[in-house]
Amino acid sequence: MKPESLTTCARQNQQQLRAAPGIGAVVLTVAVILIAANLRAPMTSVSPLLDEIIHKLGMSHPAAGAITTLPLMAFAAFSLLSSRLSGRYGMERVLLAALILLACGLLLRPWRGSGLLLAGTALAGMGIAVCNVLLPALINRYFPQRLGVMTGMYTVSMNLIGSLASAMSVPIARTWGLGWEKTLALWGVVALITALYWLFYMRTWPSPVPQAAAGDRAGGRMSLWRFRLSWQMTLHLGLQSFFFYIVMAWLPHIAAERGIGAETAGWMVSLMQFGGLPFNFFVPLIAVRMKDQRALVMVSAVMTVAGIACLFTDRGALLALGGALVGSAAAAAFSLSMMFFNLRTADARQAAEMSGMAQSVGYLLACTGPVLFGWLHDLTGGWNAPLYVLTGFVLVFIWAGLGAGRNTRLPGSEKEERNNLRTENSNI
Image (cartoon, rainbow, N blue to C red; front, side):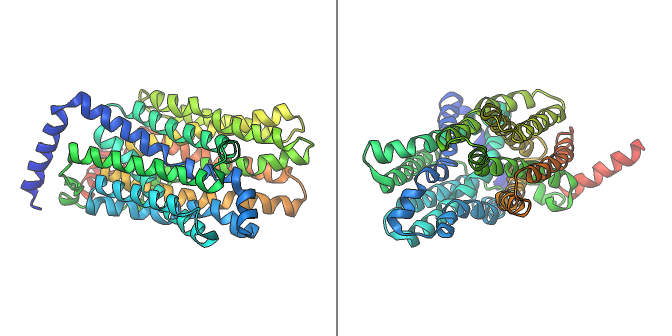
């Protein structure tokens, strides 16, 4: 497509959006909430049913563990590919394909033994990975004046539905008599409904503009991997996931070794997830009003350290408080990371590229966390040494967050980088 055609399409698209600002914005807002609702529940709904799945299918524990680790591996593998597909085929089309892939994976996985269960889980993880990367960029494109509100709604929807899925899986499977198969398949139905709704939005408010941004033609698109700011945003996202998945995975075991029952430990994990919901919503609202966000980074770091400190104790109330503090800090840091992708980038396409880089490396880092923590426990024979190591990682988190929180932005092109360098040199 010629540059003149791109300009014409862009103008037509903007006129379309302005023609029905109320209806179009409401429909798109609902779409964002629905897509976000599919990003955690398909994973969190599995863990409470894992023992039943193992018994029914005769799976080994390593194979059953793959059910929870495969999505994280898919996040790491497909996050980078997502922004490239979006740039070639358009963000809206790629999101639709991801939702269809997610629905197919979730609907297929419960019915034909462990092989299809693992294959369906992998397909679902691919679909979620694409949506994870593109949803912040979608908000950047269509809600540039409402970044805080929309990011808050997206993260709350994602984590609230994920928490409810974890809490409701066993009652749905046992009390309602659906069994683990139909319980897991329910989330495939939700994904299918979301895909149909997104298709309705695309047909009603078409977006003819491909994502070949002007920066690609005027000065060359920059590789994000060469910038310190990109790596700081990546480490900020990755380390908050690192802390969260470690504590969520091992808190019940820490509690059990200190004489606390399994039911109480389960409530601790639920509190850890639900306690972060207010931070999911309010942190983006606060961040978007601040000149820079370094103060918010320090708040989440202090909460993380305080939460880890509580895990050294034997008292159930303090262990629960520790889990809640780490969960709340991770929620605040996650929402802040989603804001960074928009506040520190030049346009929606670069936001998608930054999201892809950060989530690819970040979730790869998160995968290693529970394994490393468990290995340190076996090596030292206790939980204190792993907790000290975890506290040390907070220093890296602070460095990354303070860098990402500065009031600066990635250059959108080679030309912009040269201009930035000239500006910096003239100020010296």
